[in-house]
Length: 339
Image 1 (cartoon, one colour):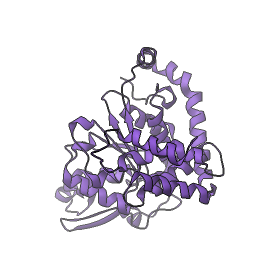
Image 2: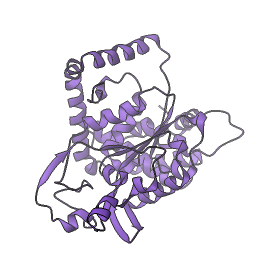
Image 3: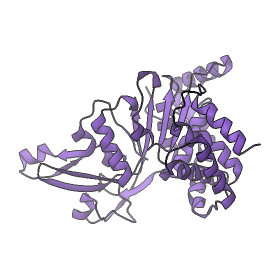
Image 4: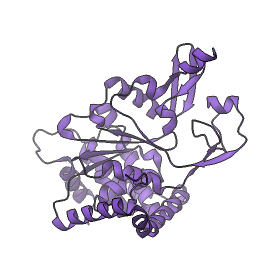
């Protein structure tokens, strides 16, 4: 089995999932992606493909927290003890958070080996430290234990991981894009965590024969001759990478007109979305889409294109309406933002 990630551009279909991941790569403040649907639909493949597509990050050499060399975090335990002297590039991290992971493995704990062999009290970073400036991938996120959910909520809100135990007091940066996947038939997600995901995607196995055949053909070609397959899709992936880099550089200058903000609020009010997180996420996603297209201003078309992604998981349940959340969002979008 090859260790090279499948080319992002070679993924067949699943356009909504690819769009959501691309938008969060442009603007991580959107808040992550929740992917619910069938098994074997390329959820984890898409996450790893995008991470491999992204440009490498510049970090302090030897820093386990992926600190930026040009702006090391003052709270970083490593950089406090070892002033940054050299820079190195690393691949954008994609860290798996297993369902059975202990809290110590997630947040970090006392380094027992150093404590026993050298008598030193040192901190061993956990998964959250490794995920900083990258992606934290949680498969079957709806089955995650409650205490880990609470922990992730705290870290996601603050952007820092605070560990105080066994005589240790450590604070380190932990900003990452959470990507969660799961099957809704196996359990629901806690509302507190559900609200923290910026975008939500529903995926399904393709029901088109030609599309299914193309999935099989590409996967088989990738496994039989990885080098040739990667070469075939390198140009497409390079174009996508350049558009993401350009969008990152442009996004801070993209304007959001008052008319777009008004429609953003109208959509959320019409759908009955709680709080203001829906409006903020919708605005950020629309702005990222405009930047990806190279536009200097957000349009109503940008808003229309990302409305379902940003709002379908924020709807209140309506026992009198049997329509799914995607249908309900589409219905309101048609009323508020007619073509």
